[in-house]
Length: 524
Image 1 (cartoon, rainbow, N blue to C red):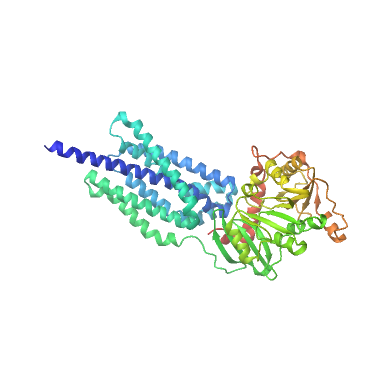
Image 2 (image 1 turned 60 degrees about the vertical axis):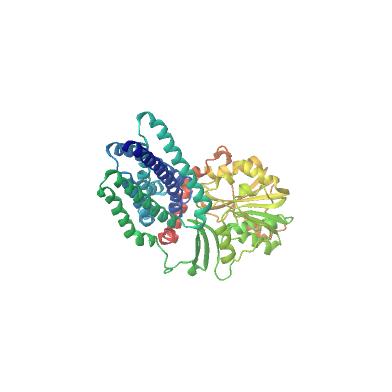
């Protein structure tokens, strides 16, 4: 009698246990991807959203998961019916403290440089929580396996559900959560969710072992997490405004921390994205403060036929407004970051003179209708390189959008090394594959590091044209430089080592920005 009545209850408990295991690995699988993706947003304001940062995060994630699988398997074999709740609660606590630890860790790793600093920061900040999340899988497989001949099916199901959780976590974070909630708040919320999950599992483990003490470690960790919560919520660093800089605006977007920073002593207002300055103007008059843009604004004087332009990389919008004010040129603009577009309109007086598009240029240029007399490609800042915008294929696309006798102007930040720098030479080599003629200007003569402006066209441009004043011609001729193309390679969608070639540039630029703005502005 007892056997027949207890069997259904046993089956129900087994079904409930299986469902709980699948829910656990689904949530922890999602947590792994959320931490990995948000890791770049925690590090990027200081080290940039470069390939090195992504490589560091991916490598650290794989290292942590491998360590978690190994350690979790050993622990699961030695445990009886408990332990999973403790693993998840430890992962929760270590996730919760990431926002609190970010600033001191980034400052401590700064002397290591871009590549080592990014890797060590990722290792210290994210590997502890990811390791414990990796331990969940082996525990779950052991709990879900009742017979030896079912271990393959159990393991396959566990990892399938965990992977599905990672997919859902990635999509929810990228498509919905991150645009509405900041990275720090998301990590805090994730830590609390993991604490709740650990608490539920602790109660279940207590029932299995019939010992109240089985739930005690998870309960103590949850209490510790709640005690630390006020400090974690208040973590980071809000710049006080004291000193020589004042933050006028700050917004976290999908692409970086976008700030408007004033330096009153120099009458300077800057628009920055992470650690790159993408626009600058005088505070009093709002006029452009970047010399390379003055070179670009002389192009219509060299070629007076220009009536319609396209600016890729809107930034603060000064080039579009300058072309309108000086030459009545209508300029369409493309800007990938809506936060940059908002800041340009609110703090730099940007008003579109043509169609203003917010989106990735490589996709958006397929939807624009030319022809354009002038196309300005201004996306290559001192920080990370959008390498996909400087390939033979992209330049061929842009050439197809040009009117007869049209010009492409490309701003590139880097070293010259007497015209021998491989990155600069590769840009010249790539342009040479698409355009018969090109001229190269440096923003500041005598500086080896700076902005280099490439003007590409069907026929040579004459900087001594009568449409320029003698002073303008002399000013441009003083900035003409020669680049040895043989030192470079053709950049393509298939092979594009630009970011590797620009490592020294990225290191130097970051050092300059840290010295100028200081860590108080760059690290939250």
